[in-house]
Image (cartoon, rainbow, N blue to C red):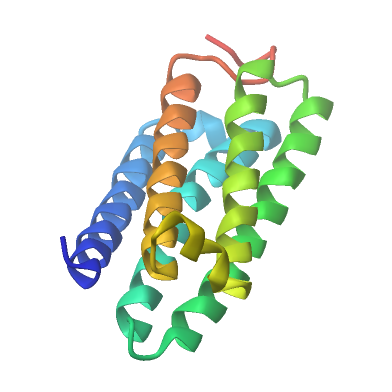
Length: 165
């Protein structure tokens, strides 16, 4: 598949996931009343929004202007990593189940790797990949982790003890 086609489909899919998540949240207004749940809901939102934005910047910058997508990936990955690590810290304080710790930690690592490839694109060469292809693989992993977070959250895992169904 052509990389620009991948990013067009990827970005559109991620924005669709953002919209679907909004619909889920609207039907559970009680989640927004509890600060710990609101943070988790926001974390899931970011796990789809940030990759969607990265996909848009990959389309705008493309192969012809790598500085555009590389700088956007670094900035957005830094936001994602810091936000995820913050959620991990607050989750331990809120007594959220440990079932979210591993996927969130994995997401923070993937965000870090996305930033590294953006900063030092040569790291993709030993894998036989162009940097934008390596980023596509990492973003796909990030969305997979986001789906896992949604699943665990929807079945009640990872919610603070006083709010789990």
